[in-house]
Length: 397
Ligand SMILES: [Zn+2]
Image (cartoon, rainbow, N blue to C red):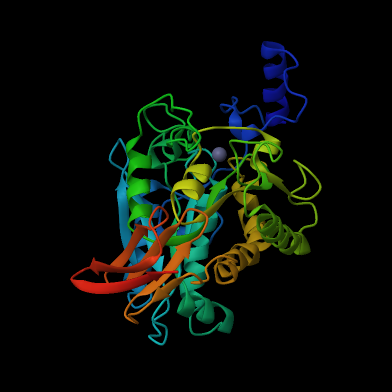
């Protein structure tokens, strides 16, 4: 209903400019004309752990700290940065306590850069809880955590979500507190200058990503139900992403798994439930294209609920539909088709080196953290690289 209203208003204002169904994510939020829906708030941790409410800002912070306090051997809390109004942008770093694996690839979930798209915010908190709670009892989760470093940022635009005050999400809106759409604010790899200067929330996120070697990530939104894969800046006919076939397979697995629980999900954009971003609607300065192009990672945009502010009585149902898909998507990091070290030879087993062949970047995972190196413009040969006081030899074949 809400999207229909937006569409009608848009047509009246702008004429029949688009033959395609408009992308809800591309429009400012309409006044909520739906019948009042429940946006019940949890005001205590105990209430939040019942998983049928949204957290107040303080309960959200308490819950993230509670995870870190209760499972110190499995996770720690990172502060990505601060919002304009000084709210915390947090990430929970989760990995298994087993020390059998030297190298574990890094995965990132990040939700709700549009402050009013809050389904993912809830889902990510519940995913943190499930991963931590299941370690040691579920073989699936134990194995996943023992082989993967998982970073979960449930809320990347806290000023937008708590625009109406820390005690409610009823006043949540799309923008940050400077009224900037954070998903139109990233440097554009294809040349479109952003309308506004790089916002603090995005600057912090870029720095966080640059400090890691995320290979795979997802950026969670709402307003529709579709897996939106790169590029957003182009239609598939204009410029096809080099991994588009892989994206289709991954997206199909995600949607199919969800539909085993609820066959009606992921049907509002097309029957498949996944789409090349630009074929749905072209945008520039989005986060997805920025991270795919500039960083050694693959990110897609998950639109997870047609209602941006999902009524709290539906939250558990959406978790039941999506939880296995969300867990399976993390596992995809172990099946990327270009993480081979072919062409790059590592001669130091304290480090793990892997290339990004599409952009010639070499990433080096060290005990102190990740580094990246661009050998794309250099000739073949032997390179000695000093990393944290250690000489690492890399052979470019
Ligand atoms: Zn969005």
